[in-house]
Amino acid sequence: MPPFSRGADDLRVEQMKFLRSMAWMLRALLFVALLLFALKNTDPVTLRFYMDQTWQAPLVLVIVAFFALGAVLGVLACFAKLFAQRREIAALKKDLRARPAAEPPPVPPTPGA
Image (cartoon, rainbow, N blue to C red; front, side, top):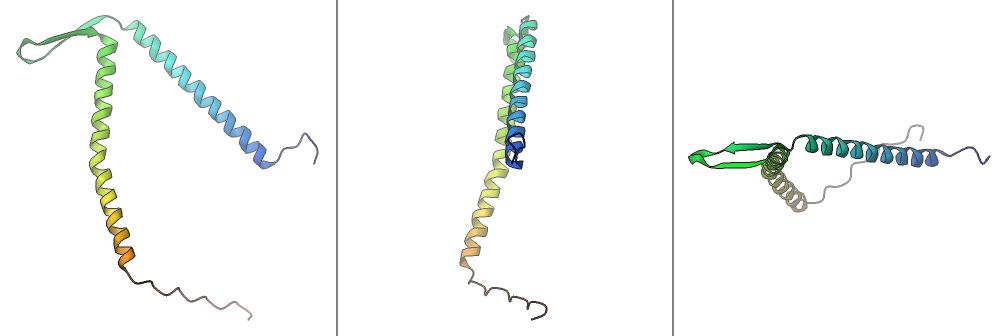
């Protein structure tokens, strides 16, 4: 095999390296964009709550705080479904173990034999 030709595995490895580097470049670009957004939105905002409670903070801090709160609430909402699925899987595995072992299906005859 000539040294300049590559096998399919080498090509696949190179493609994965390229995709990883592209993913990191995209992450870096997103980080820079969010950093610039944060630097441009440092003006203080006032949040007014009930009973004349107020909170003053930079706009970007308020946005990040509410984004994080939404992400936490979304994850918590998924937990109920996740635990229900785990219980169902455990019950199905227990049921599968409790069943008697079935005999294997018959092997069809080979044609021409």
